[in-house]
Length: 275
Image (cartoon, rainbow, N blue to C red; front, side, top):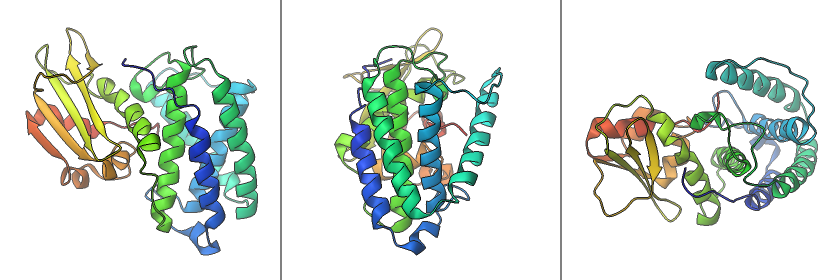
């Protein structure tokens, strides 16, 4: 894996924007639909509160109520989907003032927890969408940033507020997402040495590249060597593409693939969320 994404301090910045956003909402805006299937703004907020408190309880406080045996990736998806459904069912019943108040407390404790972690120590939970069995804390914290950033972005789009399209906050999210590319390509056959480059345009974007080694695909720093395939994605849809917030067909209309098209298409299959 390439250089670590040391982004724990960014959680406070993203969460501060979330509290400001929620405080500005009119009562009717809490009921607006989002790009998340079947979730309103209120539901997304409930989900954020639930997952923040759940992470603190399970990892910081080591309070494990659900004892389940995980034997496959599908088991992880089923568990996460169940817990998410239960959490939203409970917390969506709270009033906006309560949600905002509790969210502020949860965000403060979560930020302090992640800032205190040794970024290179093993995380309590591996980043499954990157195919890992064991992840360092920095990767888990970066995943936490992507969760809080993209769900807030869903709310902002639903209520017509400006997005968080600043390089300091959005680029680390994209950098974390693309760490899942080697796992996405795990079953893609190609000659050894084949290269696929992803270019995300815009001030927050960048370039990432994977290379086919003898037994797997790995991330590498793009260099002067021309890739076999160049996939160009606008930054405005990149986060939606990797979080199932846009259909592959709709995304493909805005994505450019140069070179081996078949080798580039799996980029659109990258899913950097569970469930």
